[in-house]
Length: 172
Image (cartoon, rainbow, N blue to C red):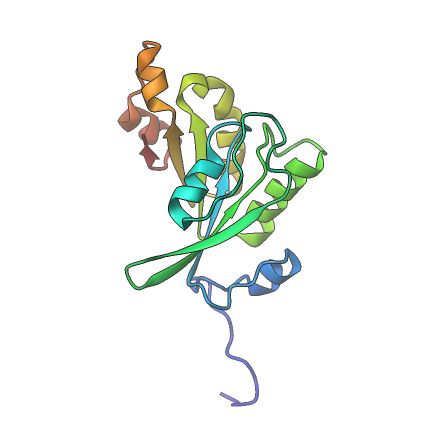
């Protein structure tokens, strides 16, 4: 190997898409893994973001609250994680800037995992976006938020069956 040439990237390396991430404005200099938070508006993505990062990303219950992405990080074990809170969107297929930001980040940034935050009280409405994301990547986890509210409304979700049907882990 020529010492003046950079080592070739590998598909299993966490930052093997560094060029795409740079184009998207993401720096991974001090991080080992990249996590995207995606979901419909008002599902609690920013609350999950705040709980993981210890930051205080403004939360609100109105569409378009997060219109750009927010970034933070956290340490778990010996690994450093960068987490990106994407704008809430109902679809990756539309042409609004929110949807383009979310779609482009998942498609071109290729995060190590996309955590899809879904409202358990309105799961059917949220599944459209879940399925669209799963068409792009299988590196995903479905996080069912508001599960306590769903139970109060008599909604029961079998997370094991849902995980089996979707082919990704489901966390209540």
